[in-house]
Amino acid sequence: MAQEATEGKPTLVSTPASAEGAPQEEALHELRVRIPHDLHRQLLSLKVLRGKSLADSVTTALDLYFAEHTRKLAEAAEAAQRSERVEA
Image (cartoon, rainbow, N blue to C red; front, side):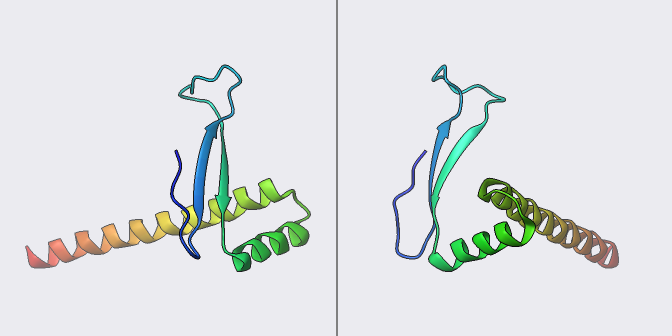
């Protein structure tokens, strides 16, 4: 999978990590991304502060991002349910 590079936007390229060539359902994938310079600096800072590899720093950052995103989605769904109950 590849996306066209656009000014200031991340670019994503995904390749299977499997040596067999055919992607497997549980196979790990390597992602290559082009990110703005300021985001790269933030990741490097996280790497230094946490004493982890850059890959681990990216994993940590993504875990935090998706945890926050999931929390916000749950709050929105809960608010929608409350709104439906009030209207009924």
